[in-house]
Image 1 (cartoon, rainbow, N blue to C red):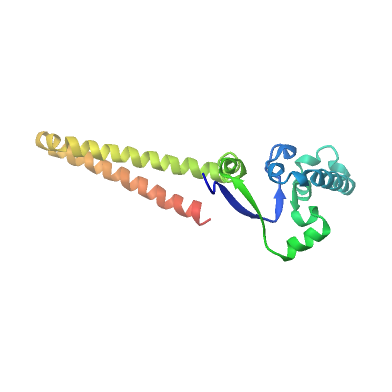
Image 2 (spheres, rainbow, N blue to C red):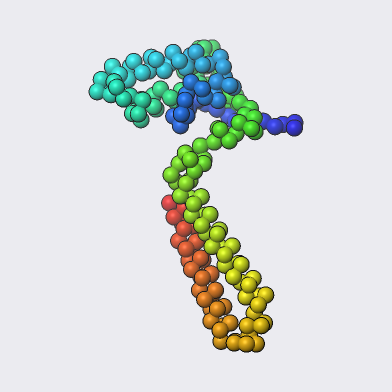
Length: 182
């Protein structure tokens, strides 16, 4: 398919959320920068250990180290003349194939507790809406027979269905501001 790539403007390579930075997809699109990254990582790690000797054994888990080493602005890795042009000229763009997009995105339940809770609660709300629609469809189909035999029973069932819908509505009215406004 023509145009099967998505253009992204980039200013840095950020490997903080990548499990194996050495095998990152960034090197598929910027293979020429991998050696520079390795050098950058070694230098910054040595500086970090010198500055924080107490973290010498566990520096990989320290967020300061991750920020200094695993997020690299492109102008720091490019040769000086390219870096100057990069900073002052047009934006740097990379074309990500659609097939690779799923690996590129950090907006998924597996990478963020917020998104995990968001998808869980939205899914549960959707299941309750589907359940309520099934119950209302059942009353619509069998309502005439139930109305002839016991109209009070039908009224009670419809009232309970209405209470269920109000409950689903109130829960969503609570969840909407929590997820979207906070």
